[in-house]
Length: 163
Length: 163
Image (cartoon, rainbow over all chains, first blue to last red; front, top):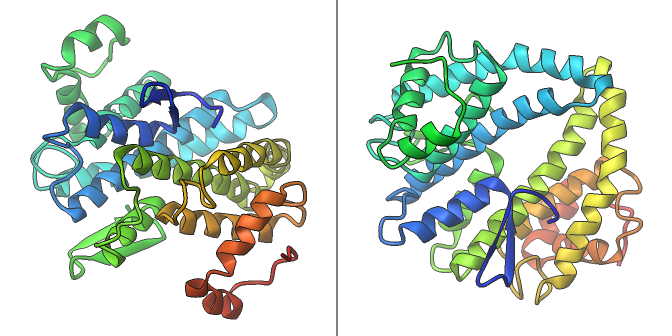
């Protein structure tokens, strides 16, 4: 699809593009016995929905950050007008989830993707999570997962948000 | 997620948003014995990638069509600068597919979603498929599927493209 990011799979025979599609594929591959994709058809659909919803938020910030000069101001206004409304909705979904993660009690692949989007928002916008304590807590918990913490500490910018 | 479109599933207990996620869920539900989602993990990832790729094209046209006045001109220029490049890539992927559809020899749920995007592009842009004969042929074949044709003839605007 002549896009980044991409991965080559099946020994280089297939090039897979689209971040969300790549994440779903990797989730199936890394833990084939514990898919991380939702135990039921409904949970699986919720996982997809959450990933696609946060992909929209990523787009919102990316369009504001990388817009050409003629429309940059308008795109940044659009970001500012919209982001808090959207994050409020996301925080509500997190609170309504019957567990600590976006789809119930265990981590799904959408949570790992969402962590990446939250980091991008955090880096782009100094105040982004100021009014969202539950999202902050979720973001910090994900950054501090034992499986991820060392990598994140070594490679990601620091966050101003603290537990 | 306070968005349209949405569907209520599980007897109204769950509200599912995000068009692509809804399509994937419906594909699993309507033909549980013949999922339409790809027979292998790789095909399934390709189906996801194609749907997400065409979702980007839909966004490109929607942003141009519904942008507020201050940035409408710039968004329409962005559409015009980009759409043919993207459709060329999509047509190449179709030609490289080892069958008549985007992922091999049989219809997957991405094809039904793609049909919807192609119709939206066709309605938005009078010339959109003029330079893309293979995409045109695919679009007409999908519109004329026996399972869809009667509904489309009764409910969709006509297309200028003819077999």
